[in-house]
Image (cartoon, rainbow, N blue to C red):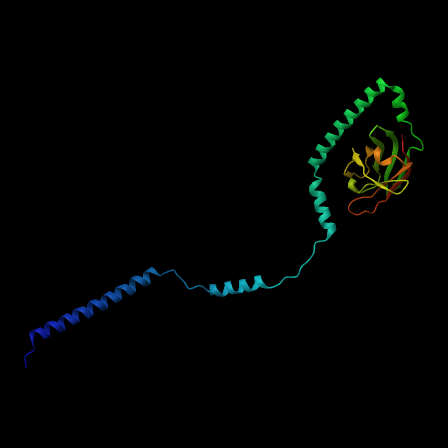
Length: 235
């Protein structure tokens, strides 16, 4: 039986095509294996991690309010750094020097007026608590302000901090008065020397007042109680 030459050719072509396809598949497989060497499958499913993170972020957390004392301490420490204190003290010294120059000039122009404005009674007055001394040595009328010359001294073994916005000034009728302090330190060192400063009160607030009182406490502990009453109002 003779095989048709056309059939032989067709079978030969099929064999060649099959061999070529098999060889191509093998070469492609080997090339892909070589390319993926060193690549490993992740240990965890990334979609699982995203789902867990989303779940945690939506879980409610307990609200814990910050203690008011902690906030006040942080604000105080931030706003009363040493460099600011030094700059403020320098400015106060300059203002005090200008005021003294003006007073000296006024004394030369009208000595009688200045002498009457410095008339003081019942002074000095002082108080001490836990080794900290507060004294009012002098009260003067400088036209627009009543000025109290005060001394602060710490004879204790621990430094004491003050926040002078907490200084309470009242008249004999119990009214609270606004006041400005000058020259007093924010922190009173232990076993320190005497610090001299001033407390200024607008005279418009004490027109009908006979005496004043000062109340000062430490900050933030508020363990000290420094209170001086019956400070005369100079007119």
